[in-house]
Length: 241
Image (cartoon, rainbow, N blue to C red; front, side, top):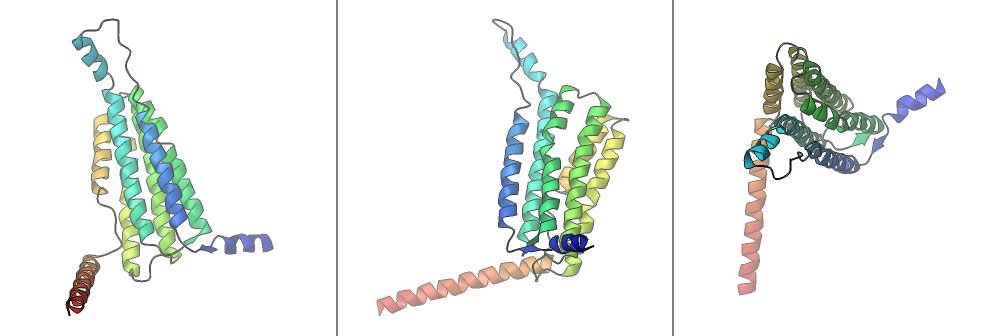
């Protein structure tokens, strides 16, 4: 029982900032993006190929390129939303570290289904497997949003209702990837269309700031800029005197 109690307390042990989590996550995601392009292998050409043969060989890379484009967009959107989320936090916990590690685990796996669907673009199982990884990663991200709201890790100036609204919005992605996974056995093109729609829906990151808060921040920034300008003008006048 004492050991269980230690574990329960330890998971809420706080770290002073989220800087190291963000740095580590940024490094991992940059490596993943680099690995994605390695799935595009240079085609083998016959000796003294004609221009037509070269273009035809390049066209054979189209499925792999489409898979690369989808996965790059997927990882990029995750990175943007991940950055937005951690920018809204004022502290972290041990449990958040491990939830984030699990998220990176799923994202690290993305190059494999990308290569799989690139080599077998007409196979429903390949497209479905592609969506399974997207589902697991997005569900993990929704779990992370739920945890940071529940554990009170957001900045104090972010209203609680905005925190939970951001979590609810994040639930749409795993639902759509589940639909895309099932739809792959009916039509791979409809499945990929759902993937693209999901990406477009989350292209703009989920923010925990409402419109009024954003306007207030912009007004504050303008006010600070005006005060700095007045200070510079006053300093210039003093030097002139």
